[in-house]
Length: 190
Image 1 (cartoon, one colour):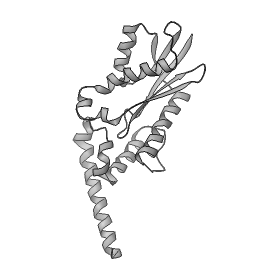
Image 2 (image 1 turned 180 degrees about the vertical axis):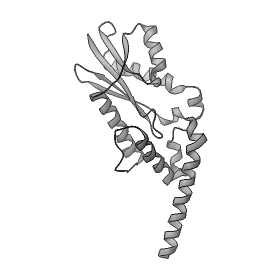
Image 3 (image 1 turned 90 degrees about the horizontal axis):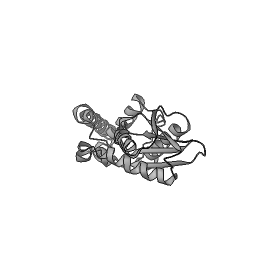
């Protein structure tokens, strides 16, 4: 029996698109799909649109890998972004199991996210790595804060904490940065 792993990157990150990676373990074939950040904002987020779109993009990815449901197993990351996908697999009789995805696929999909953050959004921090967590969150929050009104559109603003905590902190930091820039300009006589 052949195995396809499926993992995500970016679902918990403050900014940017989300990436879904599919890997056929035996051949090393990799397919990437993305979910635009807009799915994690406003009505799209309230209506759980990302959960619907994940099913669509995974189906596309499985087609690209010529998935054969009768002789292949899917190992699916445990993340809740895949909740609707699990239902789809059950309805379709697709053999899957929840799994902790590590190694090649996890590294590849996280690298795809970092490439997007650097090349598409312009996050320049040398500290930005494929390791998710608090450090990456604050790197991205600082990036948004530095040019808040131009960068807020890249934020997954549907996340509750963005509206109750982090948005105000980002604006506060932006204002401090602007004051600091003005002070430096005055001191330099600009």
